[in-house]
Length: 93
Length: 94
Length: 57
Image (cartoon, one colour):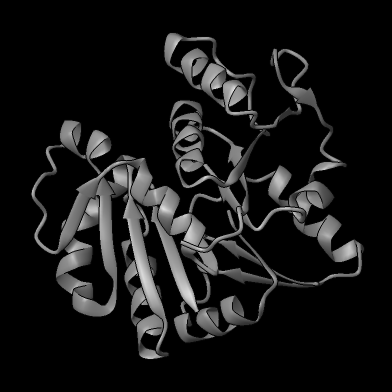
């Protein structure tokens, strides 16, 4: 693997559970993973909560356009395009 | 260029195969990781792409879809996906 | 900055258009490859090679 950590953004669209599971998995290569929820508020089921807790523990930044998403930093759609250009890899899911 | 292709749906087989072939023909290294419904395409990707791509898939997604022991592919976990994302120069998602 | 946006079957409307438009308006060199209309994969590979950032929607 390359030595330097990469910045990876996972964009949550319509498959929340899989997107969050993948985001957790992507931390396994010691990259800096952030999550952007651009879809509906995250459903608070057990699986999502576990993945969100893990992302918090791994110090992964979480951004959301929804005020209802607890533990996410609020971002508006006007800020998203420029913010995404800070990342090496962007994975919409 | 190292190209990573994440296949997370089963709706874009033509695009996946077309990109693998074009990238391989141009001398690029191609890695594929299949998860979610994308695992349903693993066998076909391996069959048609042959040596043009290194293919791995998520066992967690594959098992409930009846996908297992795909010849030419490595069954694994999100770790393989993480390594692909880390190593790839460019990543495309289908 | 050279930015490649890849559109495919099933790409959601809405925020994708907003993001592409913003990248264009910010003075970047933006290329949109719509795979529902253009299946030139050799061109796609060339674009991937030459782009600084890649987004697949």
